[in-house]
Image (cartoon, rainbow, N blue to C red):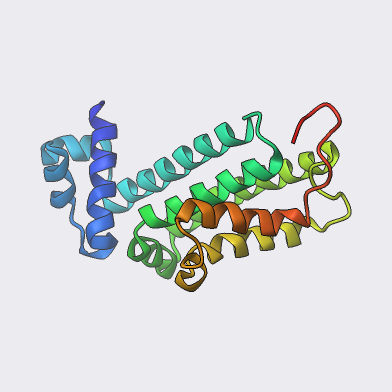
Length: 193
């Protein structure tokens, strides 16, 4: 692993544990096992490294998303996998770190917003493609579909609902089937469902 990537991953670890305000540059370079001088050769300050952590999160998330969307699965299966990925991501991200970024409303919040916008544009394009391919009813409002998918993801964090199922995998499968049964059209003629 290259030194810069090692520092970014160490910063992620530190920021997850302590949040932005309570983390120090020293915490980051010591966790990475590099010197203070090495850190400052690659990064200007704590906000700079935090921005790189945000970039890494979104790059990794978009890479996983593209991999799911390019699979041969049905649109319903892809959406179930995307919801699973989104659920896993919410478990792996520090809520304190995200809250601090949005509360500051500075460069980091703008960076996060830009990444979120790019992700949403890719997702909307995939929904529109699924409409053309017959996986999604073309008359449904795309914004409503996104809203419902977000509600399905939120449902995965509801312990009362999750406890209805023998395991999280079955909960995800049934919640996905419930939400997508109404929006998925017939599979294209050349594809098995």
